[in-house]
Length: 333
Image (tube, rainbow, N blue to C red; front, side, top):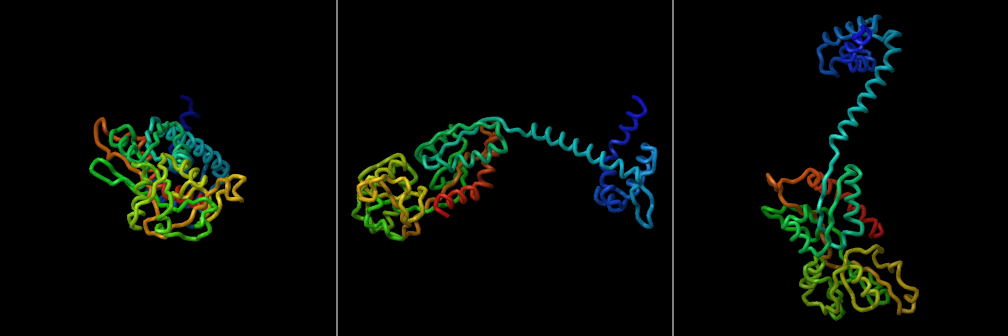
């Protein structure tokens, strides 16, 4: 090892101290910021001066100031530290890369935007994580979670927690009456559930979260609906309503309350074409609460993987704000 190399090795541990001293130009303040005794800082400066071969500080009253040599050296010290920090960040990023697969079971209505929004937020931080997605009725989603074929389930209503299953609410969104745009109720600002007692109702099938919610609304109103159709998909439900084949109750579907859906057909103005309107309901039960469910972590083979844990933590931490913003935008503000 030549002399210059040896001097560089001796100087390297002092670079952070020199950079901080260049910023403060005060030995006591530098010592406090670095958590070192003042005498240690003073000795380090003296050692650095000896290695460089010239004074780096000069006394100025009760303080110190940088010499021209120190001012010339300081930008190079800061650049070296910045490069080293960049290398550290790269190494840390590589060591923190999350690889693996996350199995998520979710209800159909969450697949168009809600779940992709959550996955996008996670993939922006952990792009090498893969997802296995399964959609279906609420009961099926929770069955997959309990059986271990899904790591997480996104459902509404929120799953009831137990010793094996944990759950948390993320946000709630309103339920609205959906009617053909020429329906007598289409111009109303609000509607009571009792006002559709005589209407043909388009329902979601048994086992779906929306079915349990609408059943509760009808129990509160004191009657059973006249179910004309049952469907497994909310888009089909809206299609049947748009064709004038009944009314339904669903979460917001993209149009503002009491407004015609923008995709209605050309024949809508004469009452014969497709089109639907959403109207707020007068009921304290007219909402659905959406939540995340997971198997409570256990040891051994049932231990929660890092990707699943990190995705669950992101959904619980950031999901309410992300999804509430989406619901506001979809509902017209």
